[in-house]
Length: 199
Ligand SMILES: [Zn+2]
Image (cartoon, rainbow, N blue to C red; front, side, top):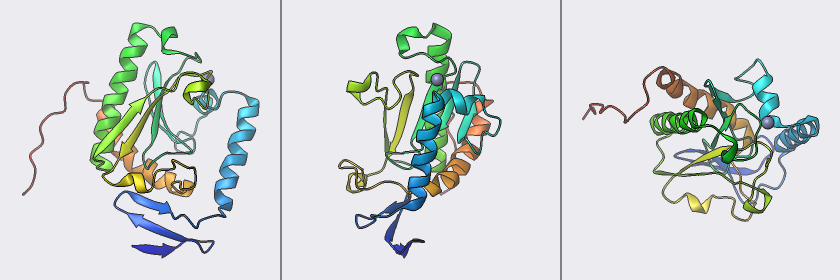
């Protein structure tokens, strides 16, 4: 399905959101995000800045644990791209104690459950870019990425940097994932219980 976006470029609606098409060259809303992000980076670590804020929805923080928190990526590689970070400002997982490492992966497990329920991806890429050479955008504060994947989505992936998920849709995605994640935050970690599927 194709539709027009506010500045006249053609966007494509897919099963997992609306992606900008290749001819999308002018995106003022995106520039506003970049400007805001770069100004906050000048003030310090954006993860710590958002963690210190009080409006989790505005800051796209999906969940807060005791030692780690979940936040959406402002520059997603795909719809639903999340980051899980320790609340402590440290550069590597080598700086994290065992309870923090456990909570990080527990949150990852819950995020996968929430993403599966809300966005229904076909798979995930997960991992940490540690160090600039490995592609870390913020190397001072370690963070674990979860990138949902859909069959055939490589057509839309920003391998050459010319296709991106439109940033204003982050709020919609945030609401969907948050609604699925909130109940999981209060249930014990572990394998998901089997749910009966309506046929
Ligand atoms: Zn930080």
